[in-house]
Length: 538
Image (cartoon, rainbow, N blue to C red; front, top):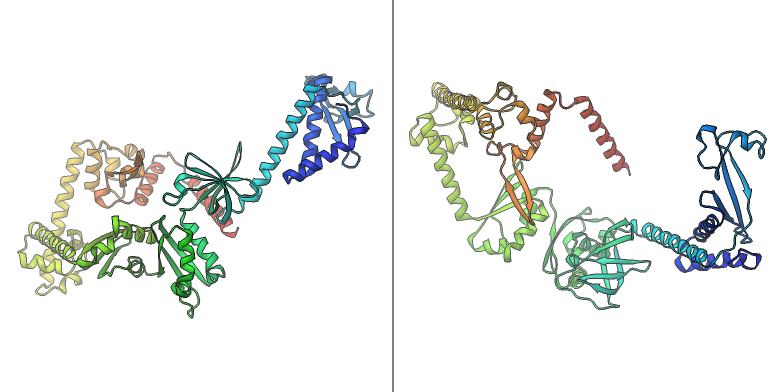
């Protein structure tokens, strides 16, 4: 094919037609044509030449030019695309390094192979432009609901036509045993949009908690308007869900608004989710109160919250236990997801038995270590003392409130407790030294003699050994083994060591050893803070 006046306008018409069909910029198609013509010209004039083609956007005329760059004498490598300053003087008045000399060359005749190659270049460019357009269109739609038509099903994954492209609904993102036939309409949540080599990948979900939240936003005008806010969602897809809502207008009941007249609003969401039962719960800032709401329809007698451990104990009547736990633990599992707390449910009888067992264990501890009779030890436990440290280092006034305890008795109690703790600490220290624990570890702030002994037993005997430990090795954690969560016991976990404390102590040890520069840490922290502020502003 020759670029002649007969087919110059045809180039523009072809570009317009392709751009209109693929819904992309005609300029991109013309750029692809220019590149393909330049490639064909290089095969004719020589691959080392810098041949460029520009197509006039009005007339369609293709102009072929050869470009040569002026370089220093010692940098001349490609004689076909470069010129020295001396060589350039015959073409240019005052040539300088970096300037280019452009000259027009005759158009080329495109043979069958060149024409085929040009077609491939154009198709590739068009595909890339189409992919970019799809990605730009969908990247901002992540987190929204989309309607599509089922095209086909592959190995349980559903390919959905979403208008400007295809999306995938994975098998594990479908509700229960949902099955679809071609041309079925489906409503999904756009979970993620990724740019990949084979084009943008749009991942859909019908099991995501956000899908339910978006459905309620569509059905409940008060949520859309921001009067009611969805604070948390927990789902067992296709079976049951819990959604926590709060109203910022005292005159509007958030639960009633979400349920709707005769349940019309919630029923619309239930129908879309294949009959998934939905508990709508009023959200509360007070965690125990919120948990009581979350465990509905079960009645709760008492809630004990351990904020440091992120655990909560719930006491229910015997007849309410199965209801609180739910079928296969569903109710308590959803309540745990909703509140983000580990929930331990027990009956009133179990709680009473456990409290009695703890009472007896603490009484025995005080009897044996402080040489007290049973009655006096029980008095201490009844006043809330749980360990020897509390007795040894508490303010004297707190002991004087116990019946029959005067200042001399209180002083004697504290002396006995301190003597016992000191003896225990000395024994642990001696054991640690026998195991080879070094002074650098023994004197490290934050470690008790008992902790040093436990570390030495685990072959951590110096500050250097301690500095190489991971935080989870000290405080414990969880690992994933073949899809199952497995508990890793930490060396210092029995002493109440948390991950945050372990991180701080290990980092302090590394700074003391000169492994880490504290100035660099401060810079990193400042950068993280700045990044967080920028994200917040965005």
